[in-house]
Length: 520
RNA sequence: CGGAGUGUGGCUCAGUCUGGUAGAGCACCGCGUUCGGGACGCGGGGGUCGCAGGUUCGAAUCCUGCCACUCCGACCA
Image 1 (tube, chains in turn brown, orange):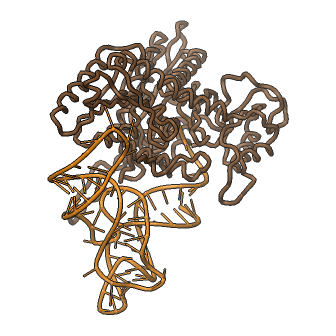
Image 2 (cartoon, protein in one colour; image 1 turned 180 degrees about the vertical axis):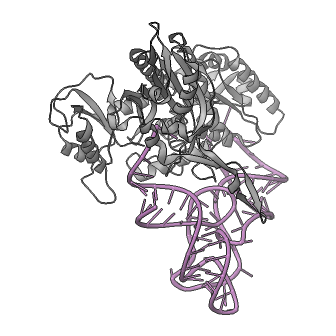
Image 3 (cartoon, protein in one colour; image 1 turned 60 degrees about the horizontal axis):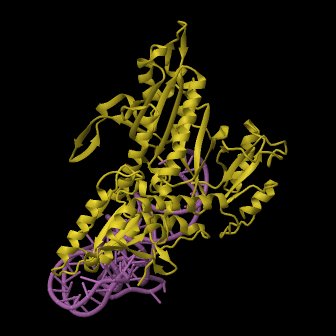
C-alpha cells in the first residue's frame, strides 16, 4: 500500500497550498506552533536543517572578511528614536519590557508597579541601533574601517499573523552590520553580500533566486537602497529570501558614527546591514517538498544517507547490523569534494523497518539505504534517491554492490543537489512572463477580473515588465493598483538582459524591467 | 484591528440541527504472526467534549458571556 500525504500538493488550488505546507512541517517533523502566541517550536530535525544552513553560511560570511560578535537582546527605547524612518517602520510590532519584578498579591503573581523601568526596553526587532551604538564608540580612525560584524541571534517582531518559519513573532537569523569610510565601499559591501546570499541560496539550498533592487516604497526603514533575492514557491508566489541594505549615512548621523580621515577631517561613516533568517527553512519546504513529504538538498540535510537495517528478530540480524555499521563507517570516513563531510546514520531504533523507511522519506533524507540479510550475504545495498522516489506509482529503488555504492554515494548526493536545483530552476524560468503589454493584460493573466470566491487564477508565476522607474506619488498609485490584484513589486533584477519597450504603467519609455508577483 | 470559521484522547475528525452512559481512523502499550514497497489478528491505556455561568430530571448538544486558534484582509525577514 502506498500512501501520499493526506493533503496533496495542489499547485492549481490556492486554498490547499498552506495546508500542504503545514502537513509537510508536521510529517517531516520540522516544527510546530507553540502554545505561546505567534511563536514556533523548532524540532530537532528542523533545527538540524537550520544548523547546516548556519554552518555553510557562516563559513561564507567569514570568508568575506566578517567576524562574529553578540549584542544585547534588549535595546533602550531612545536608541530607536534617533532614526525617524527606522522607528516608524518598526513601531507597530515591538515587544516592550517595562518592568523588572513581579509581586505576590493574594496568591496571584502580578507585575509590581514599583518595579517600573525608567526607560522601556525593546526586545530587538533588528540590531542596527544597538550595534550602531557600539560602532560609535569603537570607530575613531579611518584605520578602524571597514568594520565588518556579523551576529547570529533571535529577534522579535510582534506580527499579526504568523506562519511556521515564514513569519513568526520570534525568529532566528544572521544579521551583518558594517561601517565604511565612503559610499563606494559600503555599496560594494551591500552587493558583495547580496551575491553571497544568491550563491548560498542556489548552490547550498538549491533554491534559484532573482537578485535585484527593491523599489523605493519597499525599502528597509532607514535605508538608502535595499536589495533582495526572490525565490518562486511551487504555487508561483514569491518569497523574499534575503535582503542587503545600503544605509547611507542615515544611521551614522543619527548615532554619531564618525571617524577621522587620513586628511584629518571628522567624517560620518556609511553603513550597511544584511540578513537571512529561519524563513529559508520554509522556503526550502515550499520549493522542494512533494506529496511524500520533504526533499532536502544534501548540503543542508542533517543526515544525507540513512541506512535502514531490515531486522526480523532472527540470529542473522547481528550480521545485518554489522554490515550496516561497516557501511556507515565507510561512508563517513574522510571528506569529499561535494561537502565537508558525509552525514550518514544507521537507524537502529526498534520500530518496523518499513515505518522507518517512510519516516526518512517524509523527513527528506536524500539517500535511503536498505540493508537486509540478502544484501549482507551478497555484499550489496538497495537504495532510493529521494529526489526521484517514484517511477510512476512504483518506488524507484536500485541495487548496487557495496564498494560501488560507497564510491558513488558522494557523487549521487551531488546529483541530487543538482536535480533539485534544476527542477526548481525550470519552475522559475518557465513561469516568468515577459509578454505583458498593459495593466489590463496583467489583470487578465492573474485572473483577478473574476471577483467570485474561487478567484480562479489563470497564471501562477511572475511577470517581468518594462518599467520607467516612476517615483513618489506615481509609484504609490501603481502599487495601489497592483494591490487590487494582490500583486506586489518584488524587485528590479540586477540582470537586465531584456530591458526596452514601453513602461506597463506610465506609458513612458522603459529604462529597465521590474518583477511583479504575489508574495508570501 | 476588521471579515469568516473552528474548538471533542497525541493527530485528523464524526457526533450538535432533533438533549438520554464519549465515538472512529491513525498514533501509543502488550502478546502473537509478520517484515525486501507505508502489515495483520487479539487484547489494552488515554478525553471533567476550550473556559465560566444558565435552562433542564438529564447538556459535547440549547441559551449568555469570555478565551484560544485557523483562514481571508491590513503589516512584515
